[in-house]
Image (cartoon, rainbow, N blue to C red):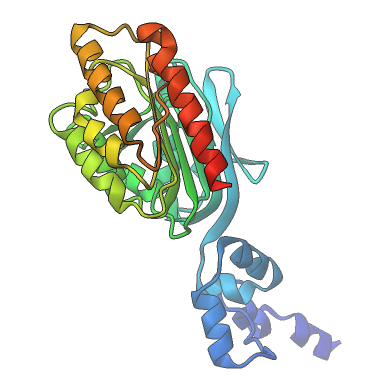
Length: 306
């Protein structure tokens, strides 16, 4: 009995608590274990800490594969790997490593437009493969955290989102893309009142795009007159890297745009770039003739590639 009591004694077992686990005897050598500890993927880390608490004690970070919102009355809530995530009870050391999805919310639910900021404050590391965000207002630092994935192949889809500086002013488009070197697909469905294309933002955007070597598809939708098409025509006529898609909301070309598009299309058809842009708004220009001609040219290029 005395031996049993000694075995169960808290004094005897205090060194083997969660924070002070029993020393592990691994079959692999120390350099290998050190490499595993310092270089895991999110999925591998999740399996490791589920297998052995030693790893979590060494690096207390919680890996989550998929996070998404769901609606509950006038509030939006979070699910992490299909389980309800209560941020008020959550550690501030999350590792999000695959998918993020924030669903559309109505503007009159202002409490929902900050739900993503509440999550970002809990994140220590991001390695997303796909980000889909609707109707959110984010600080630039929060946006940079979410898009900081070290994994090539990240897809970003933003719909009616506003990225702002700490003073409340809107971040221009060039600042949103200047560091996204691992992104392959970038898609923005713009707010009608957006100011991200003001000043020289579009010119700088056209200068940055060719430097994004992993970028495959770049899409801007729901554009307004605030996006001056003339500022990007030179890039479109020389582009041989990225599939570009630009579309205006309720496009009705004025005389200025008719002249601009006539000149642009003439040069494009005379000397087609390797990546012909997708410009759906052209269906409202000249009866859609040039748009149909462009589609045929795109199809011809695809056939040549195959």
